[in-house]
Length: 227
Image 1: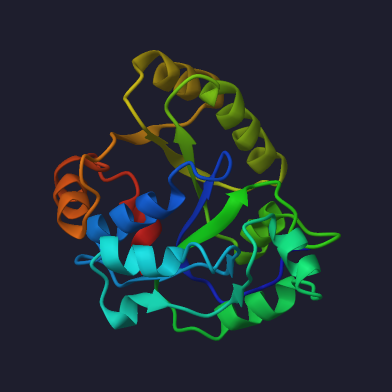
Image 2 (image 1 turned 90 degrees about the vertical axis):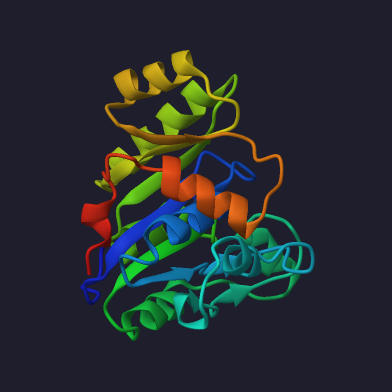
C-alpha cells in the first residue's frame, strides 16, 4: 500500500539493469536543470561502495554544490543485488527508514537514482519497484541503445505500468540506434527523451556542455521538476 508521503517533485532514475548509465543520466539531469530548478540528488541504496560511489560520481560529473547532494541511506560493501549484499553483511534493508528519511526533507525537486533494475530485490519481500512506488515519483528509464534493448526496455515499462507508476520517458545510452528508438517509442507508448552517445572524455565539462546543448531539447521533463 502506498504511503501518504509529503509531496516531492522529481524523477526516479531507474534502468533496464545494472551498468546501463543511470549515474551518468543523473549527472546530466543535474547539469541540465540544476541552475533553473532547486534539485537534490539522492541514491537511497548503494552496494559495492568499496568499488563505486555513485553519489561521488554525480557530485563530480554533475558539478553539484553541497546542498544539491543528499548523501544518506543504505551503504553496503559487495557489488551484488541489495538483498544479497545486506545478507552478506548480516543485515536486512528495510524500506520504512528510507521513506521516513525522504519524508523529513524539505519539499523540492529530486533526482533519485535506483540500484540495478526495477525488479532487483531489496529484501525478502520488497523489490526496487516497491521503493519507486512508495516514493511516488515518476520513473525515467535508462536503457542501452544496442541489441537486446527493445525487449529489456519493454519489459521494464510493462512492470512499471503494472504498478501504476508513471513513466516520464526513456533515455538511451550508447551509439544512437534509430530502429531501436522507434521500436521502443512505438511498442512502449513512451517518448525517448534523449540518446546519450559515448563520451570520449567523461568530465563535468563534457557532460555539462552536452547536457545543456542536447539533452531534453523539448523540455519534456521540466513539468516533473517544478517545485
